[in-house]
Image 1 (tube, helix red, strand yellow):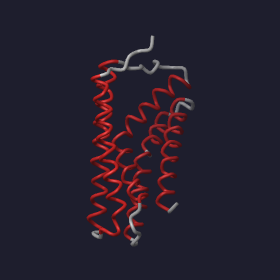
Image 2 (cartoon, helix red, strand yellow; image 1 turned 90 degrees about the vertical axis):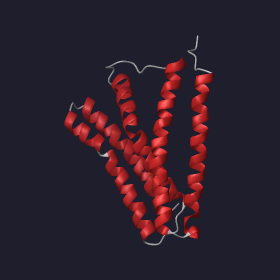
Image 3 (cartoon, rainbow, N blue to C red; image 1 turned 180 degrees about the horizontal axis):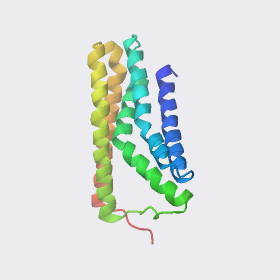
Image 4 (cartoon, rainbow, N blue to C red; image 1 turned 30 degrees about the vertical axis):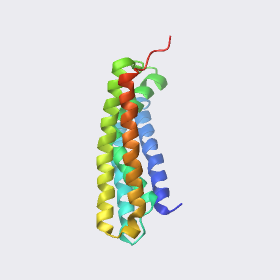
Length: 179
C-alpha cells in the first residue's frame, strides 16, 4: 500500500476519532465549545488529505487508485459530513447518554424520500469528487499517468447510477414496518 492509501486510512480513522472525541467532550464532560471545536476539525482532516495527495502528484507520482479514492473520500466527506455528524450526535445522545429522543425508523414514502435526499447528497459528493478527479487528470495531462483516475471516475459513475435505481425502487416497493 502506498503513502496516499495509508493517508486515506489515517484520515478516516482520525475523522471518527475527532467525532467521538467531540461528542464525548460535549456530552460527557459538558464542554460544549470544545466539543464543537473538535467536531469542526473534520474539514481540516480533509484538507490534510487533499494537500498530501496534491504534493504526491506534484512530485511526479503516477496517479493510482489511491489518489482517485482520495478524491472520492473528499467528495463523500463534504457531501455527507454534516449528516454523518448529526447521525452520530443523535445516537450518542440517545444510546450512550440515555437522553434525547430515540432515532426514528422511517418506512413507506418517508423512507423513499429520505433515500432520495441521500442520493442527492451522493450527487453532491460525486460532483465534488469527480471535479477533483477531472482536475487532477487535466493538470497531469498525460493519459498514461492518469488511467487509474479514469477508472475510479467510471466506477463511481456506475455506482451513482446503481444508487439511483436502488433509491427509486423504494418508491415502487416501499419499505414496510415489520409486524
